[in-house]
Length: 68
Image (cartoon, helix red, strand yellow):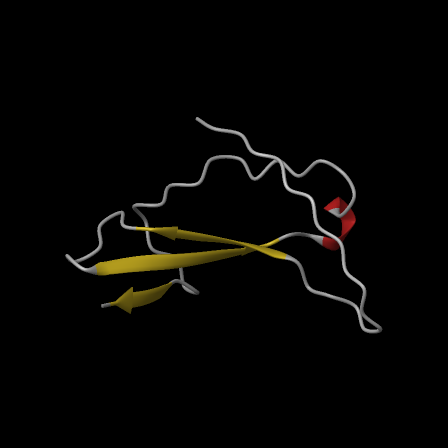
């Protein structure tokens, strides 16, 4: 298990849609990586967001693959 802290700020006119992007090589072909994105719920902005357990070896619908 792991934990991390994030901080960000924006200086834009329009609202942003925050997300966490994790690049990893779990179950990836050699030379490739998976890019998993997780949306941060709006009610968690400025507070604590418990993402629970994330199994990176399981692909999710919005995963992308980048191969060199």
